[in-house]
Length: 110
Image (tube, one colour):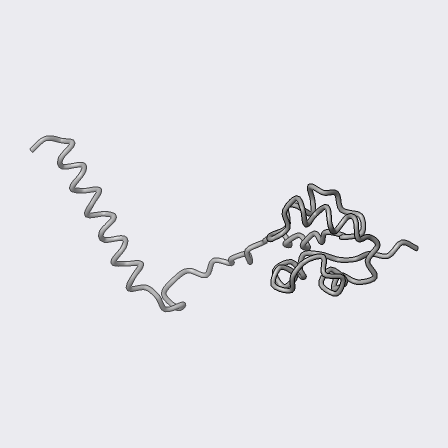
């Protein structure tokens, strides 16, 4: 046998044996205690809400169900007291509003 073949077989046997050992040693008493740090994850950024009273046509157009014509209608109907004014003023249909209501806000100027 070639030396490379022997090395490959030996490597496979080592890895196969290591897998069997790790599969068998599941009890905490037989495995060494290694402290593990909890996974650190970055906080998810808060969803950015689109202000229907100040958003640009491009920002409005990016909302699902809002195209160029509806973005123009939203801008033309400003200011809004609440985001549900979009439906009450018949700017957009309720099914479109249901798809974007969690993505928009109607901030009031102070």
